[in-house]
Every structure is written in C-alpha cells, then in structure tokens.
Length: 309
Image (cartoon, rainbow, N blue to C red; front, side):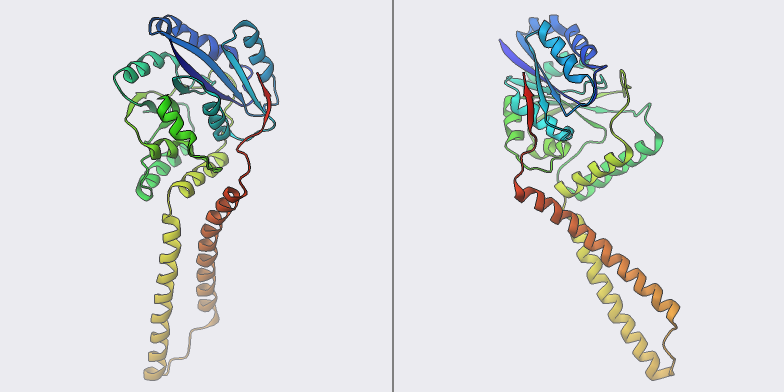
C-alpha cells in the first residue's frame, strides 16, 4: 500500500482540529479502494489555545495522527516546511485546518496523480466572503508578480496541493530561511494540474491573516522571486542624474542669454524633497534585499521543535 501524508499547519485552531479530521475521513472508502494509507501531520505553530490538547485526543483514538509542536510561533511557511520534512508518504498534501481547502476534492486530485501528473494544485475562482479591499490588492499582487518575476504564480492559488515524493524532495532541497511557498512551487516546476473551486469560508474561528501580515508576506514573494525592484532603483538613479544635468544646462543658458536670476527657495525645497524621497525609497529597496541576505547567511534553523508525538 502507498502512504499519503496529510500536512496540516495549525495556529490557535482548537475548534477545527476534530472537524477537519472527520471531514477527511469521509473519503476513507476511496482511500481504501486505492490502497492508500493515511498519516495526519498536525504542525502546531506555537498555539496558545487548546490546539495541542485536541490533537492529542485524536492521537489517543487513532495512531495515524501525529503532532509536531514548535517552541514558539515561526509562521505558516515554517509549518509547511516542517510538515514536508516529517512526511514519510509516497504522496503528500498540504491543507488548511479551517476547511477552506475542501477535503472533498482529494479523490479528484489523486485521480490526476494516477494519470501521471507530478502535482495537483488548486486555485480559487471567487473570493466570496473576503473584504473587497483585500481581494483588490490580491489581484494586483498576482499581476505584479507575473510581470516582474520569471516564476509563474497563478492568481488565486492556494497552498492546497497534492504532490508526489519527487516534488516534495525538490521543495525540501530549497533550504532558504525566507520562504515563499507559492513561489517555490512555481520555481521547482514539474507537471502540474490545476483544479478550480469557489471560495469556501472558514469552518470556525477567525483568520490569522490581517491585511498587514498579507502585505508583509507579499513583500517576501517579491523580494524572494524578483530582482526587478533593484533594477528600478538603478533606473531611477540614472534618470535623476540625466534630469539634473539637463536642468544645469538650462539654468546656465538662461543666465548667459537672458540674465534670469535663479528660481526662489520654494521650488528648490520641492526639488530637494523629491530627490531625497526617491533616494530614501531606493535605499529602502536595497535595504530589504540586504536584510534578507543577512537572515540567510546567519543560517538559523527555520523552526525549533518543542514536542514530537
């Protein structure tokens, strides 16, 4: 029999632990028919509620349930990486515990694996239930990423993905500290089948992703998979040098031909403020890349384990 590892990152999700488990087991007859054994890998990302206790309850009833608990909150990206490291299956699937990734799609996803695909990914075709402002900026982000990056990131892509062992090993070979999984999926390649579904609202509880956290996460993607911002900073520097040179020439010519006095201090202050602002902005871009490099060269572990059951 083949083994399917179900990787479930969790952070303060005690209300959804058991519901997710039972929802997945609704496909149990299909798994048995296909000769698939299951292992549930709950990755606790330093939860402060009863998430760990709920997983341990399931573990007492079913030995297929495993728990990996972090020493603190390291973020979902660390949870995904830890789950892939711990997974022993011939296949692995990443899923959100809040049931926004419908377990009912698993049979269809596995059928495409049987047809020869290396991975089966999912994307939302609607964002029903999300704030409009978040949906708007999400669409802008995907358009921007696909313009400035060579790595394709599909609009509406979820982390919900079923992969063969080969794809899992390829992802694990990328040991970078600053991780952006959606970009990593696209970078490693392999033949991927996309499945579309309408947005599903959370089963219980509230999302842990605020607008600010999503914004910072988007910066991780841009910095991790594109050097275009650095090119932009260079272009801006050259452009302002050219403009400054032309203005110097214009000022000298006006003085020699017409005897015009130089402009007053208000215009000078505006110009200095503009150029200073652009300089600081470009310096900030370089600083972001430098900070990511700094974190990489320190070689700190992506996560630390408190409990492994």
